[in-house]
Image (cartoon, rainbow, N blue to C red; front, side, top):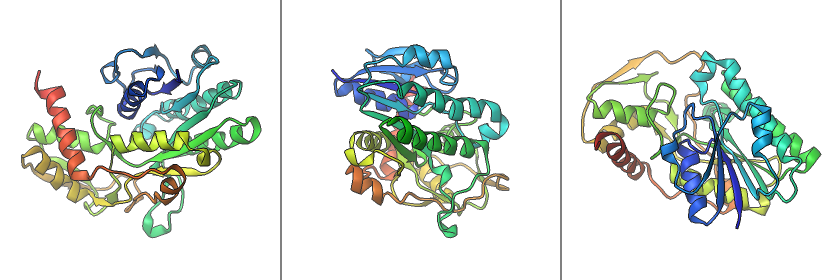
Length: 309
């Protein structure tokens, strides 16, 4: 039986990934400190360890020989949170990744170490996809990517790296630092106005969690993806924030006011979408869930989870 370790496994992506691995018959261990994850996201039958990847002793206790796959999704999420708490961001995203890679470098028989990075490192489409940093989150995630390259070259850790593009879907709970879609769904369901930072013409690539999980597994298991290349996991389609607000209201069947405020100082990217051609080619993956369908499924999950009790 295949054995897998998922850090951050109680989060939205992690919980759905763990469920997929369990359906395959994998024996799964989850390491999560539950600062943003929830035990309710986990299926029965997994071994759960509450702990922080930034703590070296905890990682050493969990990273024992015998794992076939490691999915390192644990992170201090995301840009605004990192601006408010930069040291916590560094501990989880940079130091935590170092601890995980150091432990993995001593494991024999490990077939895959997948590191989940972020589309925040991909610059504005109008600026030629230049990479730059305007938040601690971006810096710490890129540091994680560099550590992955180092351990692949020096210790032959079978590293794969993905960059997730604006994941949404079941398992994502509303909260101050969470993704815009679930927070807006909650506000619409409560009849509260939506606030757009900027003029609403900014675009992002919103990717349903099932596609994120499928892309993660495809990259983790392809022989072509080991090494320094970074694999975007996103739809390849842009949606404006103003259009997203209208689509969420349609999915909820309600209408609320939409207000505009100045763009946040660190938010420099006006247009972003995944160029997923490399992922399609090397991992054989392609997205399947459209935004309208994904939003309907997310609203249905929100109603069932938060309104039916």
